[in-house]
Length: 476
Image (tube, rainbow, N blue to C red; front, side, top):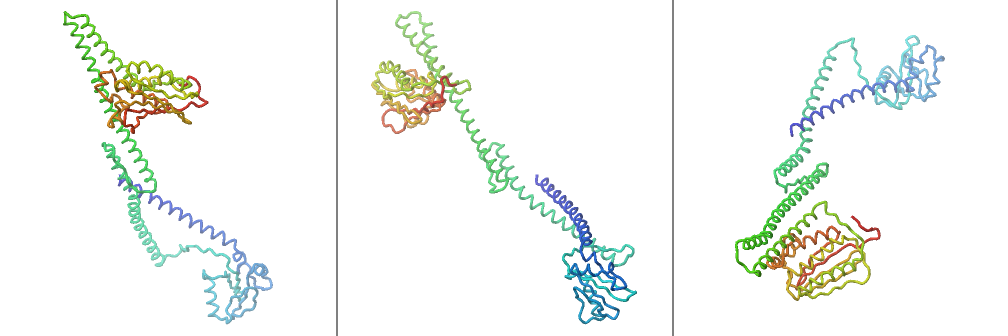
């Protein structure tokens, strides 16, 4: 990977050099063209000494020069100024030497004046035209192809040497640039590849630490978030697999006892030829009770499994929950009385509307009542209190029975978790009742929890959202 990226940088650098060279050549040509165009349009180029030169000074068009801020001087062969108007930069003491120096200095590029000087051999005088320099662009390479000299060869050799030296520097700088630039990409990529490789091999704790504020920093964040999601998903899968295995073991264990009892008593009925009617009735009763227990277990398991699928749909209706709760508790009175339980129900008198699936919420309170009866002794007190909140209704279902241990309080809503396994088997509990209750409450947008601050018995707190005015009957 490193060589490929570094080679790509070298190629890109060389390409940019070629493009820059082409742009430079074009810029030189454009500058030469601009120099020519601008020079032809400057005032001093329009009124040169050659253009206005005449043998007779009286016939010269001096007005245009003077009107444009220039100056005109005429110097005879004796270096005397015989005419001067406008700008005059000639030396005060004019002779052959000073005039020659003036002519030489007039061609200097840093000169703030532009001079046009011509000699009239017939009239034997020098004509000097002077303009102040407003702008000057001087760029030109002059080569006389008609003459070949040592200078030309020497200059050509120097130019070739400069070009070669430039190319060597270019090559060195290209390699250094590509390496330095590639390091800013290679190092983060190596770390990303290393972490991705560990993630692929099953190390889901693999993360990247680049500490960068560029695009690689964004990629680091995305990668780490993806790794977090993968790690969470793998953990959930493992937990789900463990739950599945535990569920199978629990089902096998809970079905084993009633099925063994059914098979044992059925076999006894077959092989025992002589038995009284009382014995036969006792055996059949045991077979029936265990069959009923196994049937309840399978029904609860089916109901719980159905709640995990998309086929589980609530058929909601808007109803007065206070009246509905009174009906539910009145139906539970018979079971509570037969179990020897006492009870109090504190339900508000005013109407409080909620949108619920009547059948599913009924299952919630049936399971809570059955759970209390199956796990507590005769004489237990049951207290149900309904509290009206602005947006929620709260129902507290409390008993003063044997309670639930701290170890089980966190797991009590999981399938096959039983507060008292021996007593649960004795009374036919399946260990799925509270798991079903939580699923139903979650599906309604509510919740159920077991309070942890009770010193005696157990208290379940249920919350359900109140019905808004927009809720209609038979919501699905």
